[in-house]
Length: 152
Image (cartoon, rainbow, N blue to C red; front, side, top):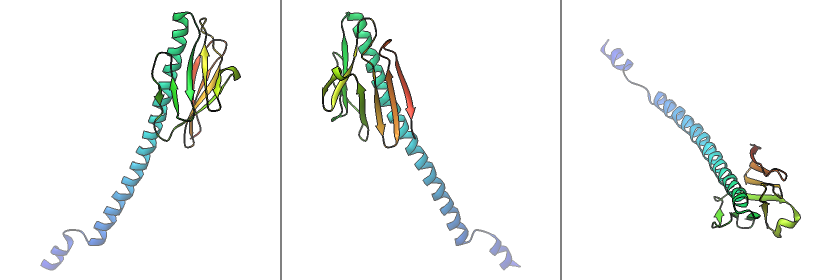
């Protein structure tokens, strides 16, 4: 009888290994999920900063009564608002610009211009990271700026 009582106490090595394996699988799933959420937050934050720079540029055009442009350099993934220094996107992200021909300053650079009445040359800017894309649309007639997520 004492042998049977000693046997029922504790866990076998196989049971312990099974529990450790399940914990390892759960931690892997959680870390992958967290990593994707962190990447999404980074691209969302960079896109919102770019929207803020566009709104600042539009505001400057209205306040100063003369046209102002936000300039983008696609080679270095930077953008510059009037009177501000160049701001670079985090590593692994890229910019894509569609704008009026007159606002193209080079093969891989250009901008979106805002006028004193609030209107703009219009276009859109995409912030890309892997398959994820955040697209910023600028309406030419009203100068309204809208941010949309596309892709996964």
